Length: 305
Image (cartoon, rainbow, N blue to C red):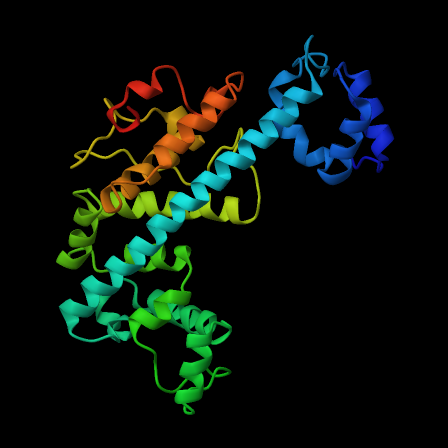
């Protein structure tokens, strides 16, 4: 059943009636005015009594805001980490395939890919993203190649190192997954990220792509169940876990964050991702991080030590 819209004051009153405590109602009103009630509700969902649907004793609006701010800061850290991975993946993709095929136009060769029709459509998407990009190097390419038609996406094709600069992380992930399964180039890229299996890297990239989209759209990772769960790996070159990720860890943020950290460590060993995350956790000691999959003794795993 649809609910009627409520004013900000009515939202505050409703929260008070359900037992939420407020230190300063005016501050609470200012938050509700710029962060929707619906957006905030997932930060308090575990504080509701399952029978009465009222808040448990001691539930404070300040606690909700702490969770919200914690989530926002964690997303900012992770977005920086994804940049490291995205740039690194793009570079390894371009370098490995271009040198192996001795051409910058290898991405047009459907024989390198499993599902050729899927790849054809993916290349069209890449061309579209390239054509609509306003970066000076794209504008200059179009000026230098009058036969390039940005409407029909036909004409002289840009080299991989150019067109891949405007490709999304999701496109990179899909193209890697679609490389021929028996291709040694696919395995070589996985090895450079510290993994022995291309299938495992594909799974991790898919999960990280979902995380990236969540962050890019300013959605929460707090209490989020992820639609793509990273696979457990059978062998690893670098520091990882004592044991396989549990189902809870794989479907919550911990799993994909750990995978992201592992891949970034492989290509940029001196990154500060782990340090930044631990400092954030220390600055919010009362945040129940098990809600995002960081269960007891998570720091004892080699990758997190």
